[in-house]
Length: 171
Image (cartoon, rainbow, N blue to C red):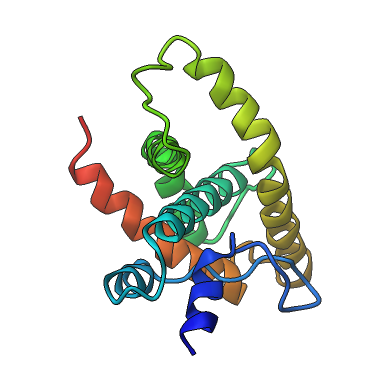
């Protein structure tokens, strides 16, 4: 059974369990932390799981804040405003988790950070953003509601509080 937990958390949350999307719901942070504390995953896999979570959260953020997404429902308007407000925190979280997982000291690469960040975002985030946008737009076409989807709602409920907590500690 430990092997299944290990595989769950070591995967980059980008494999298929449904016909509609290759994205899996982001596991709750406490589940990843419990697995690490109980040695169900290695320190390296914990770093990769956190890096994957950061990529997914920022991909979701970029999809929700996309200019094509124009919600009319109050809850969706507030969701879009929230993620727009927390974009910088999401990017900071992504860069931090990426640097930890890849053993990169961001201070050593400060001059190249803008270039490397743009390349990283273009290559790694593009497919995640594209998949979220596809889901969001498909939801809207079917129901008139952008975020009425279990996977999207789950990921909003994971990433939103995480960003909000980090916002308390921002510089």
